[in-house]
Each structure stands twice: as structure tokens, then as C-alpha cells.
Length: 316
Image (tube, rainbow, N blue to C red; front, side, top):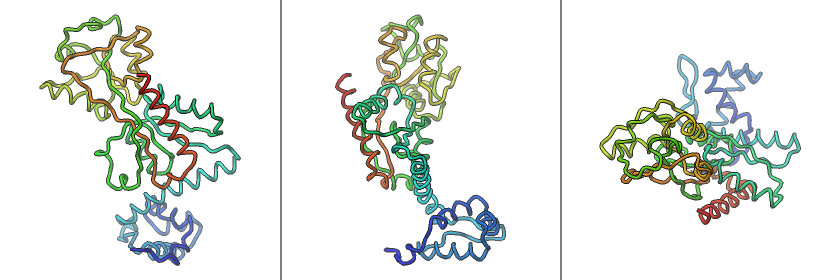
């Protein structure tokens, strides 16, 4: 259903910020105090919003006001737009070159993202980059909220809410392998006669149990009729730390191959290969909001990532 343009045209940014304040304070009087307006003025702003969108956005009760389901959805969509305006204002005030705000997983910092940025620097694209690393879902939530322009890394679509899926645009870049490893001095290093059950006799350092890599790791054990090892050390979002624990503290670990390559080449670590223990590859993608598809800086980065991913695949 098309919305009346005359009502939408009357909306201002403060109308959209109003939803955020209502969720935070739960009272029109409190919101009025924050905005230094009268309560009737706030009520009129709510009516303007509801008239423009054609649905009820707030629910009233004896305890105050709260957002309806439609209001919560409107707020989520509005937040990304408001964050984009805030980012634009900061850039214009600082007179800086465009900055692409990137969310990613730490493993992408070993090869793919640095390679893409190196390509862009060589071409003098005059872009700046702000990079944040973290867990997959945390980064996608930041993208959804408008605090990032794009996300690079693993995507598990079945773990995302449907409302998020509706606004995301994704393109596959490549796939990455997970590998088991240990120090070259470890008793398991270089052995070709290992069984899956042998892995249970040694201490492990692993990502947290709710992480994607840990879930995949434990699934392989369950498929063999075994319960996976309980790690001595858990490290979130830091494959480099897991590698150092394997190298210097005698732990076994499981990390993306891209994080291991340099250590394997230097003979500091040894890959553990066991017949029947197959870790499925990780699909690496580029994700942005549909509304960001027209941003030139985002598309320039996307193209460089595709080139870097292709070069990396050819090299491997």
C-alpha cells in the first residue's frame, strides 16, 4: 500500500528520533523533557508519525507508553538511517575523505581485507577505512543499526531474524577452511595414524561454545558418536591468541587456515589431519544494507575484495 506522500513529506529527523526516546524512557512526559517540548507537542509528533505510516506505533498503558510491534520495526529501520546521517555530519564537519566503516571477523585481517586495502591504496582511491572486529552476529547487528557500512566474513543466515534478512544484500567472496593444529613439538605433530578419539586425550584452547567455529567443531565429534573436548581455555574472536596458546602452551586448537598459513610455513605449528574428521569450509561474504548499494565507496571496496579473493584462490 502506497503511503500518502503529503504526510511523509512533513516528517523530520526528530520524528524518527522520537521512537528511540520512547523506547528508552517509556513516557511521553519524559520524552518531552528531553526534547524541551510540551507533552501535547510530543503527542502530535506521534500522531504525525502514525498518520504518515498508516499504523499505530505506540501502545499506551497505566505504566506509560511502549512501542508496538510496528513501532519496533520502524525504529530498527530508522536507526540505520539516523546513524548514516550522524556519520555524514561527522565527515562533513571534519572535512575528511570518505570513510568506509567495516565490520569483520579477526580471521579476515590476516589476508583478505589487508590485500583489498592494499589494492585500493595502490590505486590512490583516497578512501579511509574504519575497521571493527568481533563475533559474526554482533557485527551484523551493528550493520543493521547503521553503525557500519558493510560486513566481511562468515554469515549464518539461519541464525538471523527475518526482519534483518529483508534489508541485507550479500555477495559471496570465497570459502575458508578450518584446521586443527598443534605445536611442532607436540606429541601429535606429524602423526598419520591418529583416530578422532585420540584428540580427546589432550588439552584444548577453543572459541566459546556459542561461536560458529566451535559449533562446527563439536558437530564433527557428534557425527562420530563422541562428545567434543571441554577446553581448558576459551578465547572469543581472536584466532591469533588461540594460535599462540597452541604454539607456546601446548594446546590443541581449531582456527581458520588463513590465520595459520604463516605459522605453518615457518614450521612453528603442525596441522593435524585425521581421516574422517572433516570440518566443512566457511563461506565468506560481503554484506551491506540494501540502502548502501548505491554508495560509491562501498562498491569500490566490494570490487577490491572480489579481486583480492580471486587472487588468493588462484594462489592457493
